[in-house]
Picture 1 (tube, rainbow, N blue to C red):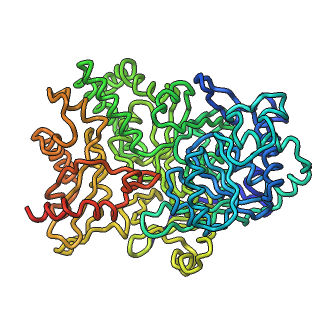
Picture 2 (picture 1 turned 30 degrees about the horizontal axis):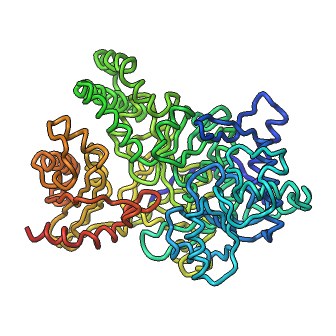
Picture 3 (picture 1 turned 30 degrees about the vertical axis):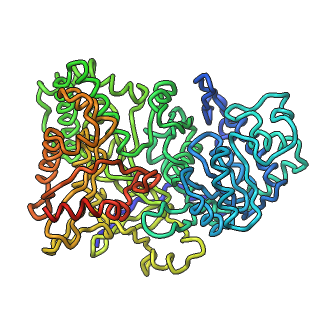
Length: 634
């Protein structure tokens, strides 16, 4: 059993809660106006970004908190939020905390059955829904629940009356809000409220470090979702310790575009780091507009899942091929990877001088090609934090060599996300970094990764049995992930205990690493390895519908759709090449012997992916039972 730990940098008082991160920022900026940066930026219908200062934001939060208190929200109340990632999400959650209440995030894609369970389990009786469509889902859930629930909308007038939205502000609707919506009306009502500033302050400070800030429901890859009790200490403790740990990335002049779901703990933990550090945050709820938002806002760092970077790389390759520069791109990619691998070797104390020819080629590509790749991310992003699933080593090396360093981290909902992370000047590509301040990582005798520290949650809401099962006798959270620590304390995740494939021959195979290598190929979208209690390992592969047309056109196969591609010789040859390359990294017994192309997509809507883009293996295996049987019949 091995351990690695990083000592706590900042210890907060027992009275501290998450709202104090915002108040502390406002006080610092008031004391030193030159240091002030906009807290948020919101995009209007014309595509222009409007900046919102910290004092302005705090005033809106207090006004909304007054309105919530008027409507029965009190310290300890549960308030649900069902929406995509957007500015209003952040505004409402902060107001919930200022009212002394607890936020309960709900993925905007959740069904009425899922919403009903969350409302029943949490006890939430106030719900913010993004739109009338989402409100209708909540209404269906409420009907099943059989309780009185108040529903408010970001984009529509649903249940709030009381005059024009801008009545209390001279007819001006605050930036980022929809005129006439429940949220705008609530803010107007808050300005007229008899709730005093002192009452709001009493409510805001009613929760302390160990009190519940939010219930985050697991995405439910197996079984019914459990509500993770995240304390104010989890969010605040992680923020004040992670910011100095990652000062090159998150600082007073940094900017980020948040597009991961705020219902997921990772996005919200990073958002609180931004509040604390002085970072300016914008939100990008529409994935279709992501490239335009990046170009317009120009973030200095990003938070994303590996699939985003795979898409960016594939898109750059497509453009290069269309312009007849596919070979040049391939060479530029090889050089970027070579330069990054050299930097990694130097970091490990094993590097030699990079050949002059490689340095010259890298300098050339850094003038003519790499800037185009960086421009896709807005042109100013130097760093990107990658989480939620495994990041391919070559992909990480490629982006670093091209001028954008991908910093892979590791964590779970139960650890407030970041438990380990690579730093810009202390990185091991292929690892998920070393422990964040205040965190201990331990590898058990069976290779399970176990965690203890400032981010580890308080338990599962109302589920003592599940809570007890999640912790070891000496207080470590048992993650269910398998990993190893190197001599410097860097963690590498090698698989999940529950995902292990045990073949009929008794060979244990962790599917994650092989799947990631195959998925890195341009026309591959998703990969699921199968073979439990079977004679060999096989793979289900889906094709990337965005990349397939360009790939096919470059080979004179215009008009090739997914259905025909699934059996086309050139497509099969390409997937076989991907499988062969992945198989070189494992023993013969662990390698993929057969594959089949599934002529449909695995998506969240189809029930095969969680909102954070993790595969629901059981759902895939059930849906593709016929294809799997055919693999072993042939």
